[in-house]
Image (cartoon, rainbow, N blue to C red; front, side):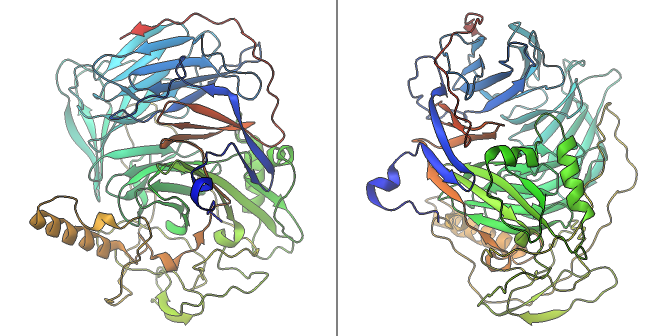
Length: 611
């Protein structure tokens, strides 16, 4: 499905692609870039990133776009599918000396047509708060680099807060800031607040309020990206050590973990209802993790290199009552009416509650499909569908699944039960020690063996209802509740004997096993270390073997750029991608191509500020 043919056709840049809902088309006149439109020489530069904000402008041009290219930062009115981009009139343009912008984030709560709050992280570790409409630079955090000297990898406003924001660094630390507080003239002193397996949370000891309020130390190596759950209650962290860690944000409690097949995790996102997390990284895979079950439920193989961005499409994700359930094939407008998570979550929650109210005894099943996308360093865009036969594999299917690999596997043991070994046609969930007492908090069905196919089945099944994550709670002060853990913990016991079988190897990548160092001793040492780490987790709940979980194939897998892709954002009428050359592309959804002739709306002249 992912193959594009051979030779010249394979290297062609695609300008449109087709899914079941119709044709997505690249709008060449809606391309945003530097005003000269010259491809950017990206050698040694930080990834191009894009941020959007809606300012509720009365003129109808509500969206604003910010993107960084090299040491430049641009802020435009985003006209999307409606009008051509006018690159000659950025609202604001900034050029930085000695450092480069690496990431940015708007605060949607405070945004108006006259003022927006934009956080910008930098390669030298600073964070700047600017207002590109008023052309103001209100504050610079970590200015003297006393808090952290490493590159800022991710910056996000805390959901529901006008003043709190979280910053991740390549040092592996995250810091919680308050825009009202200063950073002090001396290095902060910390006091341990909470500690767990491979993470610790410290408060800042100070007589007066100062930043940072908290310091999180997570995993080993860089913390590449984090994402808040839709209700703002949980935080998913993707780290260079290959672990996905999900925390209860307010209580700083570890909820669950997952390990990549190998290599670091580079990106992470939540489904619109908070039930599933997708992560991507250096194993070239996209991995789907269940929040409630704390386990991997599927992997997707379509990329030929590292996966740089994953994102759910809130407009094409659908939940519908049906008898019998069938794959949705209507128009984009009908998809949009099914679920829309953009402006608010009311309709999403109603559709979500329809799903959660169902159970396996209902005579009328629910058809559910989650759409998500990924882009990678292979310059390819992949779209994926996560359907109910993957989400609810332990329930009866409408047609028989077959799996030729007959093997022994065990289901995760529940409290008070003994582990049962079974031999079945379709493999069952493996369990094993993670060696680290990492919380798994499995809340799987009472059925002792949950069948998981090794290949993607296309049949429908009845859903198993699970309760969604709880209500929204947000930290609004420096003090964190330090009560008992909200989640019960399980110790997973070893249920597999040592096997002398080869690790799964994929076409494009197992180079992680050996170091690239020319020194043979270092190469041998690092190879043994890597193999030891893989051996610890491979085949456990943290990292199931490839044959133990369904393998998704992409609906769409298209080469859409010349340089590696760094951005994928789903909007109501389009999706937006960007590559390292500095081109931000708009792809109109089916039936949404309404591009008018270029019209120059009144806009402020470029400022060209050198910072």
